[in-house]
Each structure stands twice: as structure tokens, then as C-alpha cells.
Amino acid sequence: MRFQTPLVPARLIRRYKRFLADCTLEDGREVTAHCANPGSMMGLAEPGMRIWLEPNDDPKKKLKYGWRLVDHENGHFTGVDTSVPNKALRASLENGEIAELAAYKTVRTEVKYGQGSRIDFLLTQPGLPDAYVEVKSVTLSRQPGLAEFPDSVTARGTKHLGELAAMAAEGHRAIMLYLVQRTDCHRFALAADIDPAYATAFEAAKAQGVERLVFSTQISPDEVRVDVTVNSNVS
Picture 1 (cartoon, one colour):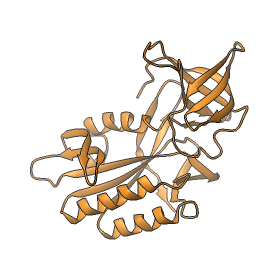
Picture 2: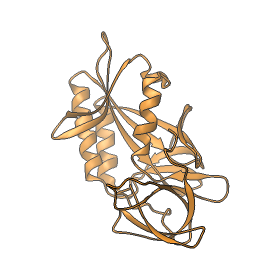
Picture 3: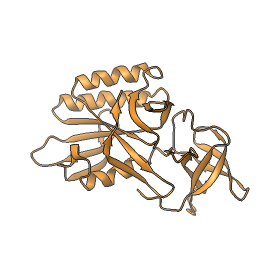
Picture 4: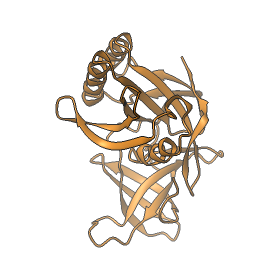
């Protein structure tokens, strides 16, 4: 997924109210950017961090910048926009690039299911069980090379696991897909110490037949791409 508008570098002043970030552009101007990430962003919102913003000229938007990346200034990036994984994955699914799901030719998004929820992707193909795919963006790293989810307690994520388990029990395929939006990680684990209820719900869902997929990404200020060749190791 290529960014629609060329990103511009900035320095983070502060992130607040979850969805707002004050930043300093390279020319010294201070701007407020929209932060499309409801999580804690542990380790990714320290003042002074180099970040990348996407400008926009949409008159309907109050904020003229969106925070897209953290630049770790060592050749690695983290994508902080939680809407990006679905955009990137949609192209990969429609192009049949994910081997585990390549047999499905029809890809629908945001389909209602469960108790007032919407599944990120519903894949269908005659002769195959429907595949319900829930996607989570993974950005937390507390140990070198290890990506973890979640970065804060997520009752919503726990609910999604229960609903996936129900789909599996009905005979459908149910897939929990974790997309690691960090280029400095090659392993993945659940952060059970942060949200024990989520970890317990995952094990219960797995016992019901819910599948787990974990993929890495290639990230630059130009684009975020799903690395379909790397199904990250699971700790």
C-alpha cells in the first residue's frame, strides 16, 4: 500500500488524548496530527522521536496531517496507523498472495457478524468453507527482535476472539491474523502479562479451531507492504 501523499518528516512533541499528536516540522512549524491508534503505543510516543506525517488538503478534515510512521533512525520503521494493515492486506488477499488463503477469490470487507461486530475480511469460494479473517496491528516490542500483542488491555480484541471461535464451531474457517508493523522484529508472542484475559481467550479460541497467521511488513516513507514470504516465528 503506497501512501497517497508523500510523507514529511517531523519530531514528536507529545501525544495526548490518544488521537492527537503535536509535532515540529523540519521548517520549525508546529502542527497537530491525527494519531490513528487507540493503543498505548508503548515505546513509540517519546518526545523527540523522529516521525513521518502524511499531509492532506481535505476541507472536511480538521487536522491537516496524519501520523503514519516512527523512524527509529537505524534503518528501521514502525507503522503506527492501525488502518494501514487492512488496506495492505486487502491487496494481498485480492491478488492471491497469501498462500494459506489464496484459494478464495471473493474478498469482502467489514461484514456484519457475531454480536454487533464486523469482520475485517470475509473470504468466500464455492466448495470451500467461508473464511472469517480478523486483523490486528502489532507494534509493541519490549525485547530486541520480538513483537508482541496487545500493547494495552483490549476488551474488544477479546470479544473478537470469542466471535471467531463461534464461527469455527459453526464449521467456518476463522483466522486471527497478526500483522507486525515493525521492520526490526522477526518473532511474535502474545503479551499475556499486559492482558491475561486476551491470552486466555486466544488459547480458548485456538482450541475451538481458530487459526493463527503472523506476517511481517516492509515499511518505508513510500509504502507499507505485507511480506508474504515471512510468517513470523511464534514464541
